[in-house]
Amino acid sequence: MKYKRKKYKKLYGYLTFVLALILSASTTVSADSALPYETYNFDYWEYVYYTPAAYVPESSLSGIDLGVGSLSNPQDLFVAADGKIYIADTGNNRILILNSDLTLYKVMENFDNNGSPDTFLNPYGVFVTGQNVIYVADMDHNRIIALHENGELIRIINNPVSEVLPDNFVFIPMKVTVDYANRVYVIVKNMFQGIMAFDENGSFTGFTGTIKVAISTYDKIWRRLSTKAQRARQVQFIPTEFTGVDMAPDGFVYATNIDTKGVQSVRRLNPKGQDVIKKKDGSLSGDLWYRLAGDYSGASRIVDIAYRDNGIYSIIDQTRGRIFTYDHEGNILYIFGGRGSQKGTFKNPVAIEAIGDVIMVLDAGRGEIMTFTAAEYGRLINEAVSLRFRGDESAAVEIWKKVLLLDENFELAYVGIGKSYLAAGENKMAMKYLKLGMDRTYYSIAFKRYRDDILKENLGSILTIGTLLFVGTGIILKIKRKGGTEHE
Image (cartoon, rainbow, N blue to C red; front, top):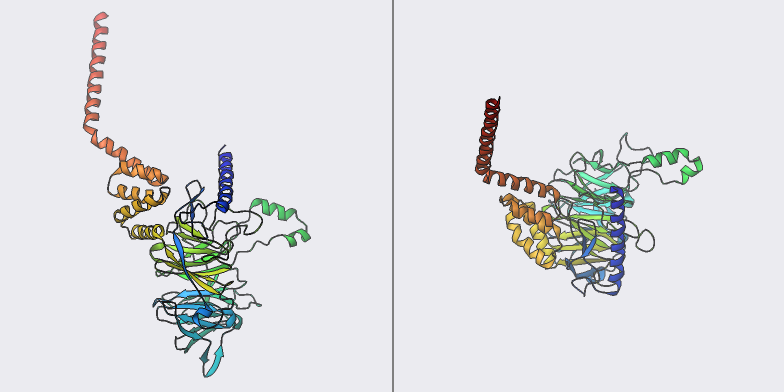
């Protein structure tokens, strides 16, 4: 019966999602009818519901706007600590550096390599440390280059050697990030063992974040019964590739990977390479519902991640051009974006970054950077989640109440208010809001505390009644025994 309920719930949720898509094609459901996309979320039961606009398109910026000609298949975007913006203009073999106001600062096309001029060849990824050291994944030169901003070469990482690497291994770096200890993490093409890690001297130290493949019993039996020719045609059970990477200030690596089942496309790797990301019972991989065939079908293809302050991170789905933003507990905060030709939609999004409440997306298909600014709804959520992350639940309550005025279905706001009441010892009020927020764990805690409160408040009466019952019962029994003795 439980299985059937779950099955029906999934079916109902899918039908709800399909119906919502149909309605959205003919009517405007979003709070902002001028937007070319919907903003939505999923409730506790994983049903889709539409919300006010969280972010609105602000601008788009092309290479022509910058005065450097059209961008050619740009593949990466990075915002440095000083606010400068770096673009890997892959097809043009150059790195563009912009000021924080999106004006051109510098174009890097070559550098001095120990006295000889050198250039990039398909630079695919870029990262800049807090000391303004620029790391470039120079893909078709099979190397990572570390440079000062003036073009002075610091070091080159290439040809890693190790017993764990196959003899025919070719180092094809695609994305790069660096932690506070100058350890370098590189996503390498066709490398399924994980993200390659290098020490501060550029020596290969091993893999981090290896994704294990789970093979079902059905798959094992089916492969055992298959012929050699059939096995050759079957999907190989190999770990998936990573697609994007970012570094949090605490040194944890945030990485994205392809997950065709739509279960988990985001990892938070500790210094030991273990995934310690928090997630809910459902998915951490973009859309929960999607079509199985046709245009834009299949699970979300998450290609990049931007770690933002206070545990918030955003990921970009290349399949449907949507941006998903989560908090540090894996709650979806808001979803927006889409594919198309209108302002604010994407053709082929490949990278995402953020500056405060501004989100930037690099579209390789258009050769443009698109920026989105937070609407009131998104700004309030960001503020409340940040306060909550810092442990200031009580200060977040008034913000959550403002969120509920805009979206009364936002369950996380109820949970935030409920936790604040719980921390203040107002357990009955906590129960009310935690129930509205569908948080069973904290509701149970509030219920137990409320039950204890009731017992404490009425302990005197309970003891008095119990004493009276005990004494009364003793008297009655004594009278009965005495009556029986006299009768004998």
